[in-house]
Length: 442
Image (cartoon, rainbow, N blue to C red; front, side):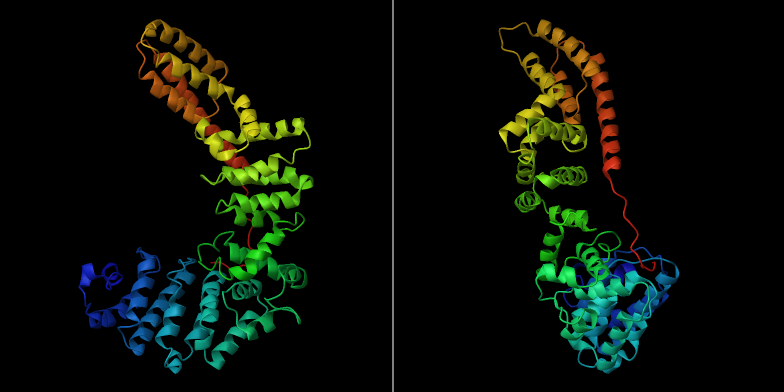
C-alpha cells in the first residue's frame, strides 16, 4: 500500500481532488505495520504528509505521526538511520497541532527519548525551528535533553546553535555568559567552548557523514560562514582543512584566492597540498584564480617548478584532456610550465594532427606509416599521462590508411593504466573520516 499512499497527493495518481478520507484511514495503519527495512522513496513520505496538513484533521495527523514514530523506533532498534525526510515527523507533528498543542500530549518527550544521536539531531533541529509552537513543558524537555550529561550533548547543542534563528533563551543556556551569536566570529571562536565550536562547524558543513545525510547542514549561514572564513585562515586550528573543503565546495576561486593570499608564502606549501587534494576529489571546480594566486607565492623559479611537478604528478586524476589546462591555469607562464611537463601528451597529439589530416598534395600513406611507428615508440617509451590523449589518438587512427593494430593495442593498454593511476592517486590523497567523538549510533 505504501508505494501508492506516498504519491496520494499527486494529481496523476488520485486526480485534482484526492480522496483524503482513504488516506486518513489507511496511512496510520500502514505506518504502524511497516517493516523497518521497507524500500520506498523516503522524500515522498515527507512530501505527502506535508500536503496532508491542509486536508486532514489534527487527530488524524497525530495518528499518522504515531505510526510514523513507531516505524522510526523499529529502525533504531534495528540499527538503521533513515534519511532526513523520514526523520521529518517532528515538523509534521508540530504543524498539525499548532492550533491545539495539547493534542501532542507527551509525543515530543517520546522523540527526545530516542537513543541514537542521528535521529535526535534532526528532531532537535525541527523543535528549535518551530520553537514558538512548543508548550512550556516541551521547551523544558528540550533544555533538559540538551544538557543532560550524555556523550552526544555537544552534537545536539551544535545543531541547536546552527539553526537560522536560535531562541535567545537557548543561546543563554548553551553559551558562556557574555557570549552570544551576534559576537564577531573571532570572539565566538575564542570564547566559546572549543569542543562546541568544533561540533558546530562539523554540523554546519555537513562533514563527515552522517551529518550531510541528516540535512541539518548549511543553516545559520550569517553566523557560521564568517566563522568558517576565520578558521580557514588559522593553520593551527584542528578544523583548518575542513574549513577549506567547505569554502572550496562551490568552486568560488576568487574567494579561495583571497584566503590563499592572506595565508601568504609561509603557508603556501600546505595550501598547495590542500588544493591538490580537493581538486583530485571533485569534478570541475578548477578555481583558476586560487591557483594563480598560489603559484605567485613561490619564492623563486625552482620552487615554482617543484610545485608544477607536484601538479603534474596529480594530473591523471585532475585532467581528462590536455585542453582542460585552460580551465585550471589562467597565467600564461603557469600554462607553459605545465605544457613543458606534459610533452608526452602534447607532442603525440600534434604529430597525429599533421599525419592524419594532411594536405591534399602529401603522400598520406607514407606519412601515416612513419607516424604510426613513431607514435608506437612514444607510447611505449614516453607514455601519455592523460587518458584523453589516448582517446584523441584512437579517434585520429580511425582515419588511417595503414595498419594501426599494434598502436591501437598500446593506446588501449595505456588508457587502462592511466585509470589505475588515477584511482591510486585518489586513494592516496583521500582522507578517511574521523569518528564523531561522543556520537551514539545509529
